[in-house]
Length: 275
Image (cartoon, rainbow, N blue to C red; front, side, top):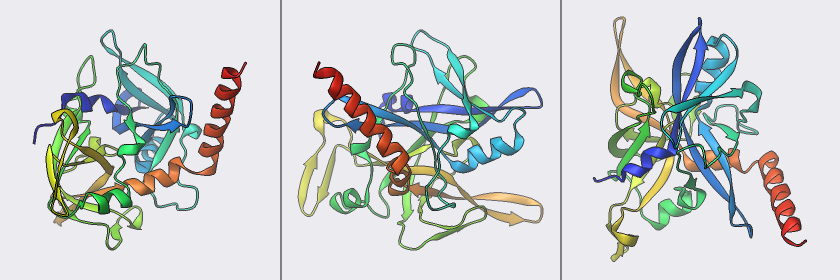
């Protein structure tokens, strides 16, 4: 599996201040929804809800800090008020938190994942994505995060189980999720998880080729966490990770408050272009 290094730019690191020291909380990634007829996109920064919940409980100032790389080198901590994060409109146990904010492209070095590459239920069927297919995730390894710039890591694995039945979790109860054979660690919470289709793939006896020799990728969801095996007072990572599917993320992005905001921007741009 050869993964384009550019894909590491789609994430930033979530931090918070506790007892006067800055700590890492998890990973966030950038998704763009095209604003029809404008040539622009509305950008959403996505992480796991439990990451934001933990910062609310443990931080000194109830501020979420987003650490992003700068184009000219180094990185910057961006302060985000707690109440700017938006969750699922009707289901409390969807482990997704969304911030609608567009970082300045002339300042920040980042990559936005177009929503058209989301691994929706239709894409899953069309591309015949299933058990055994390769996946990878991009995110924070807190023990080697980068002293000056974010240094995201890549972890690889395979789909172990599709979201056929709800998966039981300790904090969120029964949720829709993939099971992935890949070890998750704390800093990877909120990381984007991708289905890796390779350069060639056979679907319904038809050989598909990717464009320009690059592997075909779909973002499959976000990393929720992993299963533990308790041995006395020791918890052992069982090597099976829990991934919130893309369509639950899209339910958050496509709720009324965000759709109205996108419609307003489209009207403003269209009106301005017509002058």
